[in-house]
Image 1 (cartoon, helix red, strand yellow):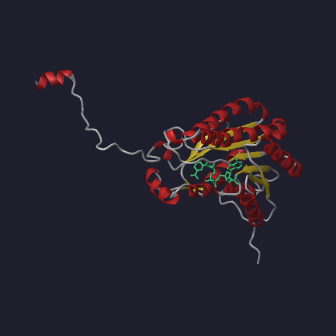
Image 2: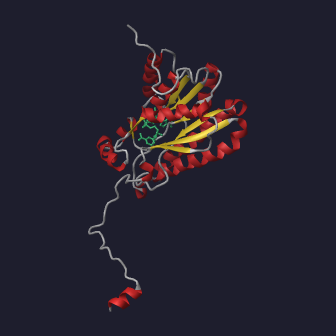
Length: 290
Ligand SMILES: NC(=O)c1ccc[n+]([C@@H]2O[C@H](COP(=O)([O-])OP(=O)(O)OC[C@H]3O[C@@H](n4cnc5c(N)ncnc54)[C@H](OP(=O)(O)O)[C@@H]3O)[C@@H](O)[C@H]2O)c1
């Protein structure tokens, strides 16, 4: 007996019918959840990333789940020729690109003083320039003439995130670019927003040494005392791509269980001993006391 096509837990099945969505990093974690959600709302989905080993099984698996073909393409967002080929192939096969989700990205945890020039350049090239490369190519190829929705997946950038200087700088750049493009392209009917996930239980966490142990501890720094799910990010992408997001542009929305407001990210070591706390007396208090 075949399983029925997957439906969304939140939205109507035909919400995005007739639209084409391109999701980078759509073969793993948050990107795969976004691809699944957009596909289950009727969008034709293309997923793309560097490794065929990530993209091919995911495209086949999502095709089975959705009961409709999901296209998987190998592409590197850092490489402009690869990006041009991705956009050209998507347009050749599907005729349009209504929704672009710039989810592909990543970094390595490193104290700032250990980040090498090569490491810095790689993180900026992927997360900032890569997002620009594809956004510009999709705008040139389709959206400037026809409109569309762009959703950039970033990270929490407002407070210090020790070990993430390179990525926070890149993502803050994406958020600034999001605001700017929203203004410049509003009259082209291109809405550009960003989603900043907090700690999400997804494949990305496994890339860090002891990532799952770290993630378990991180829950205590989240007011909701749990990690988020990839689906909770995907639902907001779907909303922003839908008529519900029709008057929202240039915003960065956090999906973080309150994490952006409170708690430690990555612990900073304490000096030993911690300094004594001295509460200064006002001069007149000293006079009174003396
Ligand atoms: N999980 C979290 O808690 C969390 C929190 C905040 C932000 N984020 C961000 O959310 C996004 C998805 O995270 P995730 O947890 O799903 O992690 P993930 O599995 O590591 O996802 C990253 C995806 O990006 C793709 N990618 C990396 N470099 C690329 C490039 N140059 N060109 C094209 N694709 C590229 C990877 O595929 P290939 O290796 O095949 O290229 C992979 O599919 C990432 O940008 C991540 O930094 C995650």
